[in-house]
Length: 401
Ligand code: ACO
Image 1 (cartoon, rainbow, N blue to C red):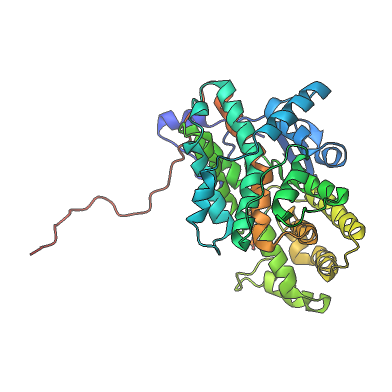
Image 2 (image 1 turned 60 degrees about the vertical axis):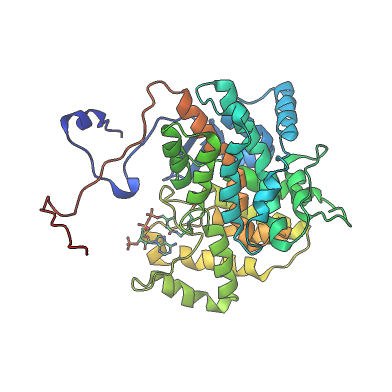
């Protein structure tokens, strides 16, 4: 049920809703979530079908263009993205300014924002073609920047993008090839990577997407808006949860220690929470977590990896779901619960997990930004506040000698 309260503002009233528990900030035709029943649709298509039958590039087209591409449109779009993957050579200099041990998300925030200093030809946000060109550039360059963050961290030379590879293959190649040895891309790993991108592509008005929309509502350029999205995603309550979740599973270490951590999560005096559990909108299974769990089993089997963390995760899920605390609060595993185990199997270090999320979510962020700017009567986002400070009082200047 929706109550439209916009008219209240002109009468001097406003609603008070910290955390936006019951506030819709926009109209959108991109993604639908039914949190009670665990349903997620992009442009009307279920996440389960998309993860099984589509690829990430096709989904990017759908999110940006509100239709499934024809074979010809798909091929042209794929070609456009491929041709935009290279970043300006000057971007290399930005990296040199960072400490070698900088968190990759810190480098990503900075370098994504810096892209606006290179592409002056697409900063007229009133022009739809320029908006789309910046969207293509961002989707294309994110894998390059993310791989550069990794290479910089480990002190290896940057690997240039290759036009003969798919989106996921190209990313894996930039991550893992070294001058002396070309990375051998396994089709199973490339497919798992692509599926992770699909499962993170969009999720309507979460904290980072709302941040992008709010930044964009002032007319800020797309690169600055996406940098704001990257910053918002970083927190452990949002995209940083995948990194925090794997760290937690490693800390638990073995199935027999699970009850201890469950008790910690239930203790109101302990700030610890089960990472990868709970969601503002899903009060049922996060459908992305179901696909992720299946994918996790497939990838480990195909790569012939026995990871004890998967046993810990499955048992933790089982115990939590049968515990009255988690049942009553409707806390289920979310997308971050199993993704880390897959990323680890692929060889991606834990501190890169949130960058992978940012890479995949860029298309969602930029689709929302583009949609917002295409809507008539779009207003600057400007929430009100409940002032709790002093009433007006007399200022007496301090005596300075
Ligand atoms: N472990 C233990 N208790 C939890 C957890 C958890 N993971 N999540 C929520 N709760 C409890 C809270 O303590 C609270 O209890 P109370 O009502 O007795 O005070 C109740 O459940 C509701 O939690 P809120 O924080 O009020 O719910 P909200 O909708 O604001 O937060 C959130 C949702 C941030 C995702 C939360 O569930 C959480 O912190 N989860 C762990 C971090 C995580 O996995 N984040 C990823 C989310 S998905 C994504 O961003 C891709």
